[in-house]
Image 1 (cartoon, rainbow, N blue to C red):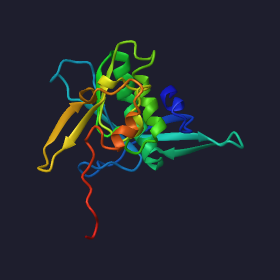
Image 2: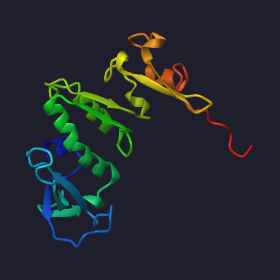
Image 3: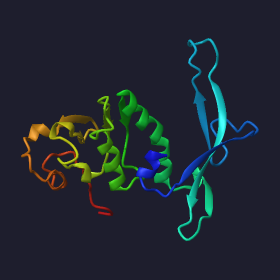
Image 4: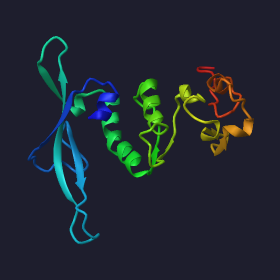
Amino acid sequence: MRFMRAADIGIDRLELLEEDHPSPPAGKLPPGAVRVHLELGLPLGSLPQAQKLLRVLAWHKRVDSSEEVALDIGDESDGTQKLFEFSGGWLRALEWGATLLVDELDRSLHPHMTRFLVGLFHSRKNEKNAQLVFTTHDTTLLDTELLRRDQIWFVEKDKQGSSSLYSLLEYSPRKDEALERGYLKGRYGAIPFIGSYGD
């Protein structure tokens, strides 16, 4: 909850309700439900993993009264749902010093939220030297106040559809260089080949 409150998304508390449901069709869950795998701490193969079906409620306090309103987590915005899904892995990586891999970190998140998440790995909360490896299209993260120059890598697709990975350091950028502007102007490559529409 501290993580969710720090993100300032308006959720006052979360409630988990264990509910009995008939088995949903394969791969489907009832609205607002999440599947939780409980690791029992026993040797592998000794017991199957227990599964419970939980409904997650997000409680919001009204500003003009003490009344609370509950929403299924599935009724929250895509960004809030993504943040909720992230929170466990994010906090566990920071707590254990693990490496966290995230594809398209910025999907459904405001740029300030993305900066908040990345910034946690450069904060005092990262006492165990956890690492974050992520892909993004958010060019506002090309900022030396957030990332070191050696932490920024690009993926460029050639005309045959093959991708290559290379470091920003190959371009020897100055310490004070405006990386976002340089990238958008094509200085470092890794920009899409966009043709004209309808010609």
